[in-house]
Each structure stands twice: as C-alpha cells, then as structure tokens.
Length: 164
Image (cartoon, rainbow, N blue to C red):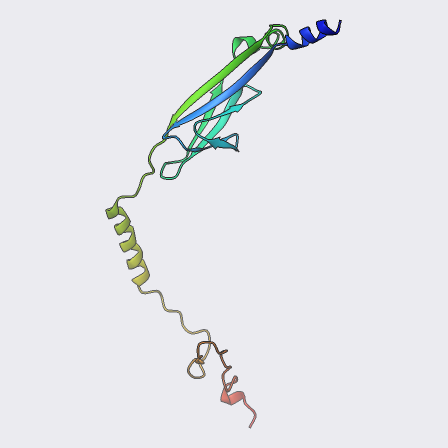
C-alpha cells in the first residue's frame, strides 16, 4: 500500500514555466514587473501567463522598457489545465526565450551642446531689470573678514530718529 502511494505521488504531473531574457549586448540589468532578477542572459521561473513589464538597463545604452506578452499555451486553458497539471504523468516544460537589441545612448552633437551653452551665457549676461532699493541706505554695507562674523551697523536708526 505504501509503495503504491509513493509511486502515485512520484508520477504527479506538473508544469515548469521558465522565462529567459537575453540582450545584445549582454550584461544588462533586468527588471521583470519592477523586480530585479539579474543580468542578461538571465532566467526566472514564473507562475502566471500574461503581459510582463520587462526593463533592461545598461550603461552607455538607452534603457529599454517593454510590455512583453507571454501567451497561454493550449494545455493551460481552463479545464485542460487540471489535466496537464495533475493527470498527465511527468513534467511539462514551458520555456520562453526573448531577445532584445539595446540601442547605444544618443550623445548630443557638439555644435548643439555649444549652441545651448552660448544661449545660456547670453541669457546670464543680459541686463536684468533694476529694482529700486527697498529702503534708504545708511552707509556702506558692513564688511567682513573671512572666518569672522559680520558686525552690525553702528547706527541702526537714521539720525532724525535718534535721541540726542
């Protein structure tokens, strides 16, 4: 009896699902559904079919984000999935491989960068509208020596308001 039960348990069917992601060039950091899984080429097990968000990041290349569909095979449709997961003896392997081509990061051409720099320089050198001072000035601004605190002005009130 025990041998028969062990034999039945060892013959239980199951479906192993595996997704392999490769990139050209290899070595890109891979995120699937915003979880880091490793660097390409990389494989990971999955449970559910559907669309996955795959993001590849590699220095010197544009970050690639793809909504990758993983279609359900015929033997995993409702009703048939019970048979394929529980009745069919052995293991069913569903291995998916996706390849991505990464594009080199676009570097702005030198004339374009220089033009933007010149525009910024001209904007900074352009005269700004002069606003009148906020109030009357009572002498030169206080001077300070590096490392020493700034001393307050000697006469904080105008002479007309001082008591003599």
